[in-house]
Image (cartoon, rainbow, N blue to C red):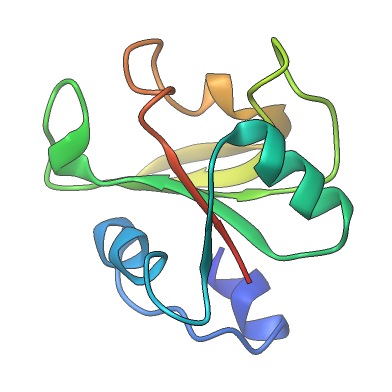
Length: 113
């Protein structure tokens, strides 16, 4: 995510929890849901989804963020994205219902710039 943001000259700093905090401030625009995030990505905007570790069903010191890209919506609500994983392999071009567990995926926040 940081590499994509850097290429687009969008300032992103810190770990996932920090990034989720930044997503609620200017120049970011909060998006209401995954369908809006998918549409914004299809329109060419830089779209990010995230969830702080403290907001997860099983709280963690680390949150998780993904870059939403043009693609299908799973179940009409989970956009396609790319993500990494701390200490593991991430995924590319998969819908975000695979990035979070079933209890957390509907708590994810979306923002675009």
